[in-house]
Each structure stands twice: as C-alpha cells, then as structure tokens.
Image (cartoon, rainbow, N blue to C red; front, side, top):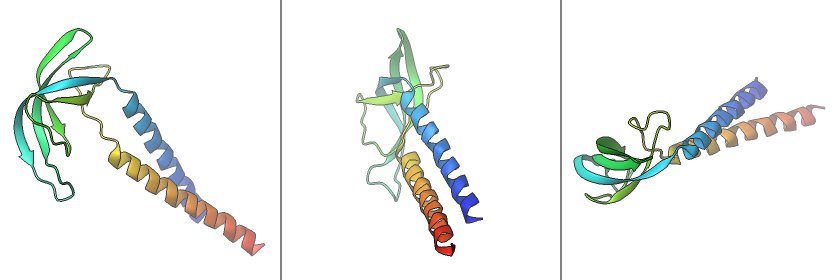
Length: 127
C-alpha cells in the first residue's frame, strides 16, 4: 500500500514537472504598467499583489490595456514587467510564477522518494 502511494506521489511530481517546463517555455514579453487598479496585502508576502493594466507588443501587434495580476511584485506605473503569453491566443495571457509549483514539486518528489526508499528498506529488512 505504501509502495502504491509512493508511486502515485512520484507520478504527481512528474505531472508538476511537466507543468513547470511548459510554463517556462511560454513566450515572454516586456509589458509596461499603465495603471494600478487594486492592491491587496497578503500575510505571506512583504510586497502586495496588484491588479494592473499593461500594454505590450507581441509579433508586431500592439496590445493595450490588458488586465493582469502581479503576485508579490513591487511594481509602479510606467515600469516594465515580464509577462508570459498564451502562444495560441496572445490576447489571453496569465503571468507565470513557478515558485509555488516548484515548492510543491520538491515536496511531492521528496515524500514519494522517501516512501519508496522506506519500502525498499522494509523489504530488505524483512528478508
């Protein structure tokens, strides 16, 4: 039972790894902040998260006043920020912050490998 749980955790870790790699491969552009719509303080971060409008250029096409959510970035008006675009539809984009996914990836892989090692150790000990 523990072996199956360890294999499931390793499979989930592999899925998270694929998600992070796909997120890193998305095209990036520099966007200029036009206005800050809303700021919210979070208890887990020193810098506030913001809902802003940005303008950017992608493949010669200019996109104006697109809303996005900046997580824990200390950005001001007229500052440039990195944006990850959806390559199929650049009008629809979502900034990519892999910190949470990487943390979950390391935790899941660590627990999965630990349980797998424990199963191997228990099998060796029971022989």
